[in-house]
Length: 228
Image 1 (cartoon, rainbow, N blue to C red):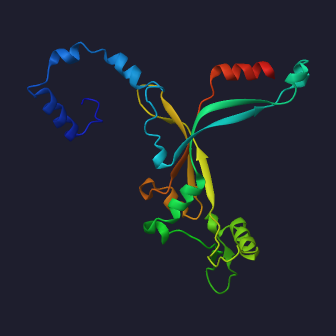
Image 2 (image 1 turned 90 degrees about the vertical axis):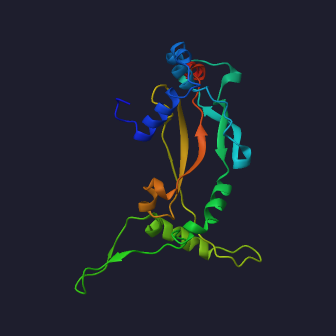
Image 3 (image 1 turned 60 degrees about the horizontal axis):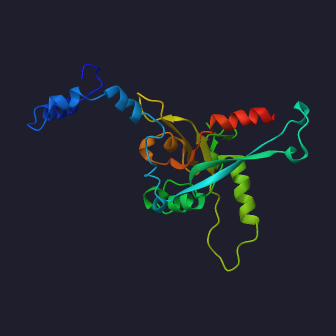
């Protein structure tokens, strides 16, 4: 409460707890709070129960190919070439299912740009129009991809519109607690068809979590160092 980070509602909840007739002071005096914080902050404290397959999450194994530097030594014949190391516990979403869910949201469809266009600015009649770059769906690359798609042969017996869906991927480690070292390394997915002004607002909910990277074990890294 003295840290200044708690609200008045939190203070009232604390008062309700310690004034409850079922509250026992001996229960908290005998607790090892440092050990509780350490356990809660461990990376393996959870059981991954929130990775529900019905919610679209899948678990797979990923192979990482590490090249062998033959100049560092003379390996045996069977050791030549790259070595594949398998990392288990890679949780991810199917990208097609994420795209399908995104396009089915009626509340965001009117702000989703299916067709690109050139954005021009002309201050007055005495100046030539100038190209304005700022959105992915107004870029030359998007316009070229859209033009190429429209000129390509269509699917047989399909008259549906054909559009480009631009996927923008980013990743960064995220700490889960303020007292431990538990963290996740999510893969974020943004759609370039959304405006950058919407992508930068968390309240718009246009960011998707599509994967969680697994941290490579130190023993595997050591083995890789020995190989090269």
